[in-house]
Length: 343
Image (cartoon, rainbow, N blue to C red; front, top):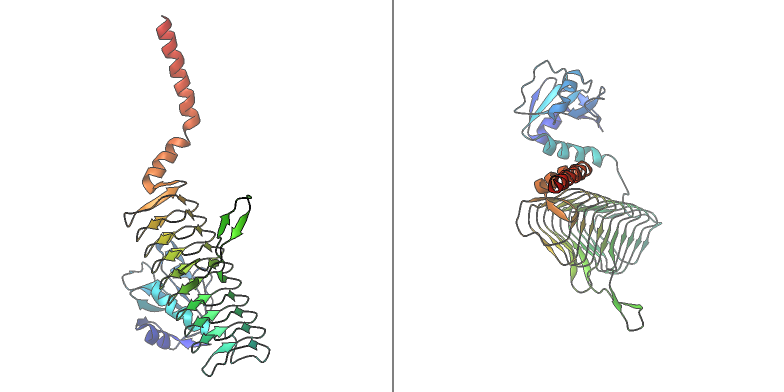
C-alpha cells in the first residue's frame, strides 16, 4: 500500500507543510524513520528526533512550535493520537485476512451477506454474522451467537453459545468468551456441586478483547461489556460482571463475580477486585492494587492492597520503607526514657 501526503491530509482533514506528492508505504517510530515511512510526534520527550528523523512524513500537533527545521513533510492536526488511530487503520486494512468463506471451514449456518471465514473455523447453528466481519482460521463460534458488522475474530478464539457481539469489535487470539462462571455450592459431605451457568455474554459496539482473556457467561442474567471498553491480554472477567463505557483494563487484572465497574475507568495490570461491589465512574486503579470494597466517589485514584487513596498510599509507603530506621530510633528513645526514669 502506498499513500501520498495529499491523500493522508484529505483523510485526516489536515494541513500539509512540505511535499504534497511524497509517498509512504508503512509507519515507523520517529527515532528510526526511513524513506517511504510516516511517523508521528506526540510526546515532547521525542522532540530531538523530530529534527533528525529520516521518515518522509511526520504528523505533528497544530499547537507545536518547532525550534529547528523539520525536513520531513508535515501533516498538521489538532490531535496527533486520534489522527494516528485513523491512519493506522488504513494500513491495517492492507494486511488482508480471510476473503470469502473457506471450503475448509465447517458451517452449520448459512450466510448470504459479505462474511469472511477462514480455514478450519467451526460455526454452529443459528449463527448470525453481519457484513464485513472476519472470522480467522481455527475459531469456534457456538450456536445462536450474534456477531455485528466489521468485527475481527482472530485465530483460535472460542465463542460459546448465545454470546452477543456488537459492531466493530476485535477479539484477539485464544480469547474465550462465554465459558462457565466459577459457580459451586457446598454440600453436606464437604464436596462442591456445580451450579449451571445459564446466562450469556454481551459485548457492545467497539469493544476490544486481548489475547488469552477469558470472559465468563452470567449464572443468571448476563456478563456485559459496554460500548468502547478495552481489555488487554490475560484478563479474567467473572460471571455477571458489568464493565462501563470506555473503561480500559490492563493485562492480568481479575474482576470477581457481579462486580460493576463504571464508565471511563482506568485499571492497571494485575489489579484485583472482590465480587459484588460497585466502582464509580472515572476511577483509576494503580497496577497490582486490590479493591476490597465499593468505590462510591467518582474520579478518584487508588493504590495498594487493600487499596488506599493514591496520595495516601504514597505517603504511607514513604513511611513504611523507613520503618526499620524508625524502629531503631524508637528503641533508642525507649532506652533513654528508662535511663531517665531510673535516675
